[in-house]
Image (cartoon, rainbow, N blue to C red):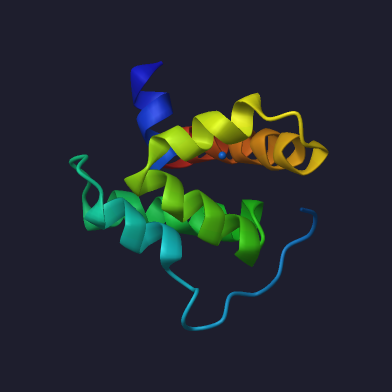
Length: 102
């Protein structure tokens, strides 16, 4: 379970959009810069899952959670419908990342 949470944090609005070159690896960069031990291969895998699971805006928001996991907790506990949708998509993303990259 702990491993799944780490992958979800390193990795969990509607629709997928193709990433622009600047945004293309926002999750992988955050993964590599985090204080967790992660290989470039793991971070790249998580990025690939993120690209197919989250839209560009969601990927940018989730990437910020690597440096401040408390923001993820705030989104999880929020009463906002937008945050609830993001949290559900993030959770699903984390599960897919754990299966694909774990």
